[in-house]
Length: 383
Length: 159
Ligand SMILES: [Zn+2]
Image 1 (cartoon, rainbow over the protein chains, first blue to last red):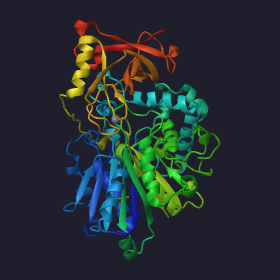
Image 2: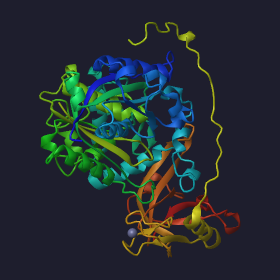
Image 3: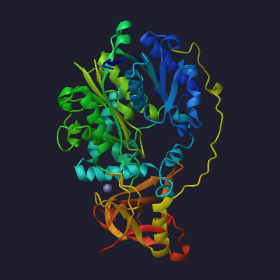
Image 4: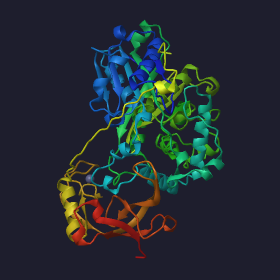
């Protein structure tokens, strides 16, 4: 049981706005081939258990878990799909390895939103069917309400939210797999169309197709394979209330609880000192700041100041989303958290190229399942 | 690359169209039934009170999400309250731009610990501010059907 869990292989496709040439199964296959090659393993022989993360309605197929084994080498092996973010899949695989019954576990998540012809309608099906859905509102309204209240109560300005977008999309310019890199100026936000005020189209991470596969192993297997792993030293997850009516619209207590669980496991006393950088959910611009606050990673009581004084830039005191985040790489539904993890591993391995952070030793990775959920997972990684 | 070959002509990429035809009933439940009947018959908002933590849930629940107490005490709350947040929505359910934006508010009714989500009417977004007083405007009684849409919208008041 004292055995540590390490990441020994990662694989990802390019994240692209459309991928008409390949099916979702082929996207999964491509990411899997890369991850197994990276880990130096044969999935048919070496992998003991597989976890995939997907949501039927987003796939456009019910009982979606039935469709996952073949293309990741999981036929006739323990495999199951969870309805949650990819980081929840990491938590599940982590627990399975901790049982001692398995040596190598694989986690997969993917998304092909370019195949969703009615994404707004599908997302609206996630709203409460009795109290909220009859109002016939586009689900972004929840982000509009939340951003308005969050900025009002914390003093974060819309310009500060825009600076998060500018930072993340610029970071993505040097990330070879990112699909939404751009050089933006504050002035561009003046002309951005309002989606749900104060939220504009530029505040929203745009969807991307892609797949990510991560290979994890227990410590004895890591040693046997003579791998240089990235250790999973802490993991936590938590859900807030599902109802819009009773949730807190400013302070995300479920994110704080998940972080505290992970910090405790990893022995982190002072998150801002003990962690080198963070890859966190930025589905909406203000969410990066709201998540930073909940994760106790803010330098001051106003999280907006972190982005103002350059603290969260790649060369800043505490880099946030050096990969470009979902704003810069593309929003990938259940695969979003796993994309953050993939990029955090690249950083800790020293493979982040022009985006490389000096002396990156410990990373925090956080995933959120998107609206209308209050579902999050946090992982601490160590080089 | 994981694939030895890939398509090289865009017109060779063939999509199939499909749909998921799904219809459902949704049950309001014990607390929801009381909430909607009260709106339909009396135009009154009902909440349920937890005697352990003093939370008043509107809409009511039969359990407290804080401490898992069973909630059996239904209390009437006001049909006016303060605006906790608001937004003007410009995109419809089909992803297309709306001709008229829809204004939505988060309303903390007097006497409730929670906030209702509903439309705001007889106002413009420029007139709105945090903490503003708003009151419910119901459909005429003979048009109500026991649904959240029995409330037409909330409108700002001077009260
Ligand atoms: Zn209670």
